[in-house]
Image (cartoon, helix red, strand yellow):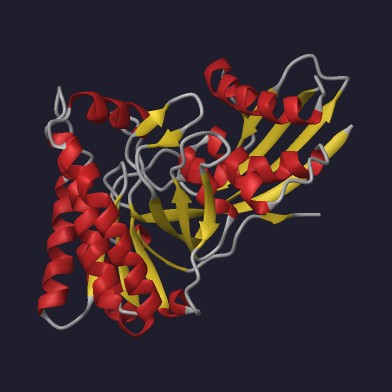
Length: 325
């Protein structure tokens, strides 16, 4: 019997990953850049044994159905192949993050599973190889292997598509991200389906791709020079462009809800009143607001009044994947 247990944190993309060039290997169409955060995480234990007849997947103490287990099994197969074993596994995962609510629980979940498999099967993968393994389960999971600012190199194949830490000289230590949990229901259009539909049918998609490289360069400059305004403006613009591509998909769709729009408008009003803060959204209705720690209380107060304090959760820069003994 071989065991491994790991914890990984969610990350929020400041420059979005939207679209795959290879569905099987999960190679993205563009580089992305994220910030790992400390408020939401997943702890996953994996046990490999000759006594198991099939893979079992428990999420938050619930045995998962065949569809959810099949996705985990496909990932375990990649790890098993590396370890040259056919042992079945039991995966026990606890999400300290709402699943499928646009808060990237798949990133923390698959990064934790990659770390747990690495430990259980003695794969001895370095961080780059571990990020490549995590990517095979969920694209954004490769970024959750690292803490702080992280860039995912799109690459051309399995070897060259990996995440790496972006040097920041501690810039992230002054930042906070306020999560507005506007809707915790499962999404109508999953990120995977939304991405595919956009890439295949959106007339705005090429414009998005053409502008990502410049956004990335600008965001890295903001990190290097510790320029919060440039960081926020670039992040906000990039996120809006990504969401714009969905409106021109066929059929069109959006992840925004009326509350999402209300939150975005509130961010603009805060800025007009001299509180520098910027928003971004992933494939879901929840809004994330980037702010410096000195203005955090004002932002929390504003959104606590606008929604409810239970819907407002603050996070700070978080660590990379860690092994739990």
